[in-house]
Image (tube, rainbow, N blue to C red; front, side, top):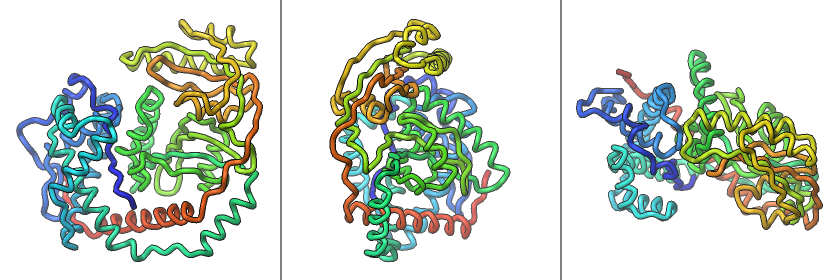
Length: 422
């Protein structure tokens, strides 16, 4: 398990007004007691504001209520993790927390002082961020020291995966990110499903998938923004694999009921190992853009999204673009011409790499609006992508097994703890 943090600062530069409803009040109450240690309502309020500011999710009243419930569960888990770490004499110094914040700042091209300033501007104390980082550092250190000796990746496991990849090199592979929403009891199911639908709506309106995954996902992959890497057709559970077959790069699935909860899947790319290198392909691209300002309200964004979907449904080949564009306000049609996929700018490159000839992308949101890419023609060339190395496969198997052991360990701590909700 690596030391990546479940924190993203993409959304910190927000106005004060949206968070006014969840500002912590001076008077503190008790939200929960975990093995005789208190979690205050102030702690819950502060962490709720941190989640809202860092995920980019719009703080509607219903969203705030759902986030507060998830935040309380997370704080209970962190309290259990810190208590267990203390039992094994794992200590995290203030200097280690400082170093972690410095790394976080460098990743976002700002200073640690700027992080504190931005948090303070929306009413969040820097101690809230420090507490989250300290809990994650302690848990990671405990898991590495206690559980990693139990992880063993055998040579025959690696050999088997390499043989499977070589034998199925003509089958599609998918670059996938996930958000997993755990369902612990049947009475939670409908509430968590509705929460998942709201997260999807927020992401389709511009909230970054990695930031939402870091703050809301119950999967070990949340520390990497939900990234689970390349997976082979048939490798994931059947219900998820079936959804991937119907998706295009850049698309986010609806909540998928799977074992233990709901999965939300983002398909980032698609390839065939035995086929040509998609980055070497030449594509004749056209684009329809539906303008929407970055500061547009949720209603305007939703309207533009609906118009983009209607335009996409109306496209039937590149000679129908002008007619299809009339289904949206002020839509702009442009011919991008023949380009190498490798020369296409992010975030359009991944979409262009996966489009088949005549195919239309799902709407892609940028600061300018919603974009639809159309591959009028496509010529593939280049060598097939290389198979992963033995080291890459070993690392992936190691991290998967260690993450599962850590998840079971935390579940055992929950089961054996005394938690009193107030």
